Image (cartoon, rainbow, N blue to C red; front, side, top):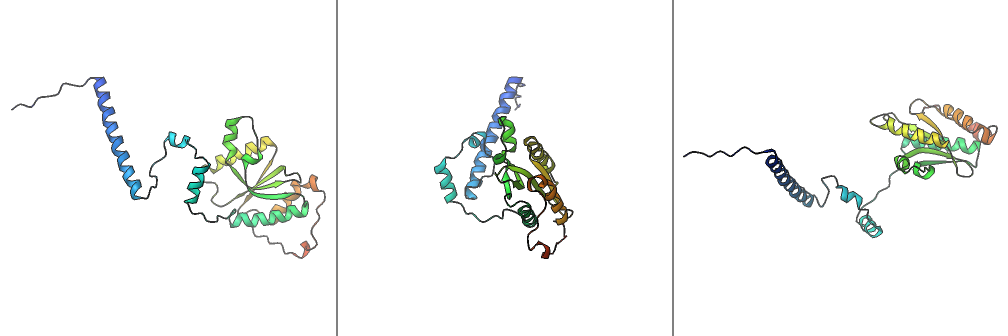
Length: 216
């Protein structure tokens, strides 16, 4: 018995065959993912499609989702940032009681731009600490750079924030973990608020308070 041979496929038939094989593989993968999701209690094991991302849950959907989830407290600042915040808040308050220090502020709340694309680039980004004046106008940003900060795309993200803040006229200053001391921070605040608050006026108990020169 002789075995017949198939005629060679032309380009169009080869393309159709590849599409058919790809379709079969795609269906099989979808079925497998659905089975995995059912076993995992509905957890997603794949990235959402563009059509899924385009659908924004309405208020009722969001409430249903939130009611079915558990939430726990997340500290606003880590230990290094908290220590910096306390010292910065003390120094600013002594220099000008009408100024305030705010933490983890979204750039989208303090910056505006007519360029919608540029605004989207900064909208979700945050700054560690923000100094605002008596009218709550943003004046200076202080970023805490921890030991593992400069990893991955951190430098690029910082560059975006710096440029946006510079264009808005807001100062940008960094506190380096393990290097910046309380004295360094005090000199920085004196320089930044020199024109706004006049000479430095220490509080009544400031002279009795020991100065800890351990870097932040």
